[in-house]
Amino acid sequence: MDDVKKLITLTKKEDFGYLTETITTLKKELVKQPTAVPLIGFSGAPFTLASYLIEGKPSRDFALTKKIMHEQPDTWRYLMRVLTDSVLFYLGVQVEAGIEAVQLFDSWVGCLSKDDYMKYVLPFSEEIFKGLKYAKIPRIHFAVDTAAFLKEFASVDCEVVGVDWRMSIPDAWEIIGHDKAIQGNLDPALLLCDFEVIKKEVDKIIDSLPKREGFIFNLGHGVLPDTSYETIMKLTEYIHSK
Image (cartoon, rainbow, N blue to C red; front, side, top):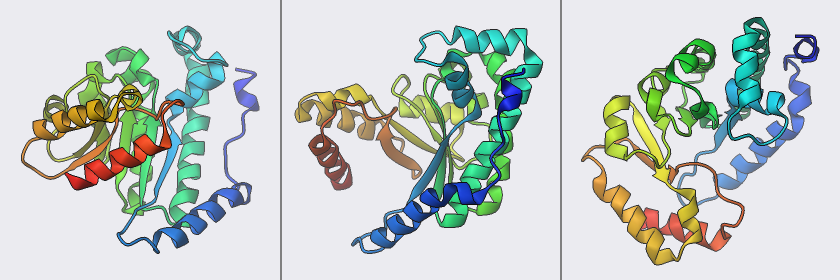
């Protein structure tokens, strides 16, 4: 608790001049494009940020994070309070600067059980999405490996739910509900393959889609470091041709 209480909640817009300047510059460039290109703002979610702070290094089991969560619930709640308020402020700065959609990444929350997610994480995520409703822009909730609690994960007040490659889009959409858009879900590792392999996997996703609007093609997680820029460009062009 002593360490957590040293953390300062973000409240000063002047600390993010570099961010607002970047957003302003990008928007000026994007309006020059032949077709509209929205600028998406983003932040890590409180749980994922907390796991980085607690573990201090990459982790497979997030044992220290879970230990704090269960053994020191007051410390956990204090940490999540600071992070939730800071994320809301940080995203608010981006909204004010002109972003046209926002995505909350909870990359590592899939390490939790359904009960732990609902008790220790979901209330804070719900607060962030409710706090962003005023912006009247699409809000995207994304995580990896959420199959065990996808319904609960998708229950926040958002317009879009992002899913990874472990579940098909049709199956995930049935759980999420067709009143929300869905984003996903090509395995990033496939971008290391020959492009003919990539095309087959993309076609499989597209061909599986229900005949309705509300699908956003994306990777199921971040781009791997060894992925070539040329492959990403070819993938983008191929998707646009579909």
